[in-house]
Length: 409
Image (cartoon, rainbow, N blue to C red; front, side, top):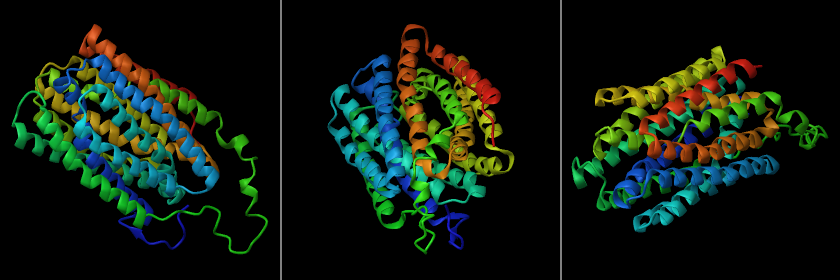
C-alpha cells in the first residue's frame, strides 16, 4: 500500500511512475519486433495461418503457467521486484536470437522464451503497482501504467514503420532485410528498461509499517486468509475472462486481416500506431472513471466496443473502414485493460494479490492457445471474416456472464 506522505510524480507514486517507464521502453522494443512477426512468418518463411496461430497460442498458453507460479511465489516471499527484474531480463536476452531465425521452430523458441519472461514478471509487477497505490486511486495507477505501456507501443510501431519505409518503401510483403533491421533497433530500449527497473523501482515491504516488534505482525502470514482469498466472485470472473479470451485471438490476425484487405507492411504499422495512440489516450481517463463509477460498468462498455470492432473487421471491405475499426479496437483496449487489472485487486485481499494476478494472467494466457488455433483454422478453412465473427460472439456471451453473475463490492 502507498505510504502516507510519499511524494507523487504527475499524480502517481514513484514506483508506479518508474514502472510505467519500464513498460513504455519494453513495449517500444517488443512492438518494433513482434508486431511484424506474423508477416515475417507468412511472407519470408512461408508459414500458413494454422502454424502462426499455433506459435502464438503455445507461446502465450505455456508461459501462462509461469504467471501463476510467479504470482504465488511473490506472495510467499513477500517480495515482488526480484521476479519482475528476472522476467524483463529474460525477455530482453531472447530478442536478439530472432536476427538469425531461419525456421518457424526457431521463431517459436524465441517467442516462447520472451513470453516466459512476460509470464514471470506480469503478476508480481501488477501486484507491485497495486501495493504502491491507495485503494481510492487504484484505477488511476493502473490506467497510468497501461497508458505508458501503450505510449511505448505507439513509439515502437512508429519507429518500426520508419525503418520499414527506409529499407523497403511501401512493399506489400515484408523482407528479410527489413525484419533484421527491426530486431537490431529494438534491443536498446529493452536493455534500458531493465536498468531503470533495477535502479529506480523500490520493493514495497507489506506489513513492515509497524516499528514495535508486536505479535500482531506475524498473524497475517498464517494460512487462515487463504479460505476467503480467492472467493466465488473472483472464480466466476476468471471463468468469464476465459470465455472472452477464447474469442480474443492473437493480434497477429488483425495484422494478417489488414494485409488481406490490401495494406502494405508500412501502412499496417501505421494502422497499429493509430490503434495504440487511441489506447494510450483512453487508458488513464478510463481508470479514473472506474474509480468513481465502478469497474464493472467500464469493463462492459469496453467489451461492447470490442464486439462491435470485431464484427466490423469481419464485414469490412474498404480501407477507410479498417482505419475506423482499428481506432475502435484501440478504444476497447484503453477502456478495459487497466480497469480489468484494477478489478482483480478489488476482488481479493492484499495478502493474496500476487496469487490472484497469477491466476488471472494464467487463465487469459492459457485460453489464448485454443483461441489462436481456432482463429487460424477458421481463417484457413472457412474465411478470414469467420475469425472475427467468432470473437464478437464470444465477447457477447462473456458480457452477459459479467452482468449476471459477478457483483462488485
